[in-house]
Length: 415
RNA sequence: GUGGGUGUAGCUCAGCCGGUAGAGCACUGGGUUGUGGCCCCAGCGGUCGAGGGUUCAAGUCCCUUCAUCCACCCCA
Image (tube, rainbow, N blue to C red; front, side, top):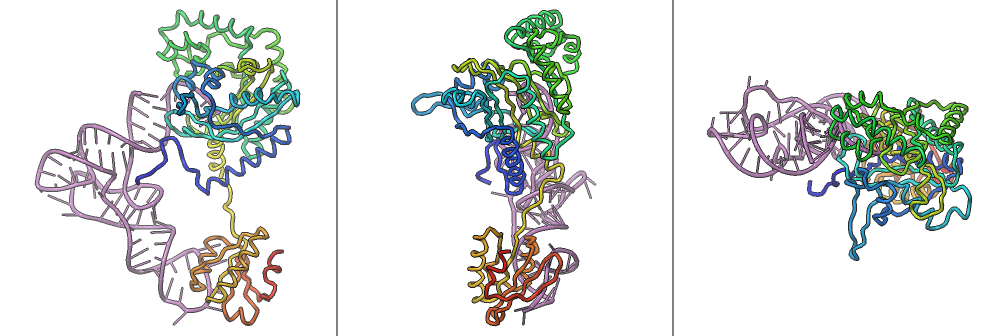
């Protein structure tokens, strides 16, 4: 084995691609019915777009980005997430001038230099949705509903929706300070990571999975208690909308995000079937980001779905069936092989999946191959049949066969 | 970056206290010279991840290294 994929990157083989296609086509049609339009942005952007929006102190920016300098010394980065690029495009092309509310989605690969693990890769694919221009909370509910419906349309219930509110520029700083104050005399009880976090990004402590830290945090003040009046109303209204849509959710005041740009609503859709990687979708509101990147002060909300994780869930549930050829033509003899070769292509042009074997093997071998492929019908044509004008058409499921005239065979088989 | 598990045929794996490599599936051919997935027989296929060491002898023991998986971290 000389050449193999690089660590954390992988081939998606044909068998698996079938499931990807199902997911993507369901997503496209569902998103369209919600008024979302597809956008494709470059895989590479200028460095600052990500460092500014995601946050310098986040793990993503500080140690996970694939960054390089091109020959002119420009600092470029393979996108670690989609939102920053979409926001950039929204501003650059003044998409807000066309419609007051812009709904965009995209599907494509992201790159993060993390240690690979179950459900975690260095190149991974996301379906991404962004709604610009409406402050919510109906837009929040709509966006969350879209994510939920996507999973439902794929037959995936049994996922839990967690929601939280992180507050806004008004109330979040107040909570941060309060949390810091609470943690000051409890530092000895925290793990080294959390001790560091208590200084740099105290909200992240809620993410820690260590029992000892969980205990400290269990008595900590809750974000939701510190929400300002508008934020509290927004959050309550969102919950009311979700309830009336019949969408179950879990209030999780420990749900914080690893990207700095989130404000107010955050949510995560989780499963217990993927080991430590329990999030299959995550997102939230990012009202300050468009302005931060130099655009107008427009609110926005969005989410990302991890396609690999979705595929794993589908595969666990049995996956999808392999496609099978509509027809296999078993040609016996040189003359019939040449004639059948033309018929095969005549039928393929009409959209039928037709196979034949080019090696002029015996009938048994060809039937065996047709069986393996799962062909629905087999047309048997030897040189004798060719001259008499009658072939044999066998239905592989009922095992019945009949004589068929060969004069107009391509036309006859189209139906 | 830090732990732990695993590397043997194309795939899934067995291989005991060290004695010169095995099964199932897949593939090719045959049993059946013109009728399918089953069955039977045969064949193909391996520097045992790589490098070093111990030994008369290493897939097996020791060291190093690489790959991969899982977990921490973080996230989709």
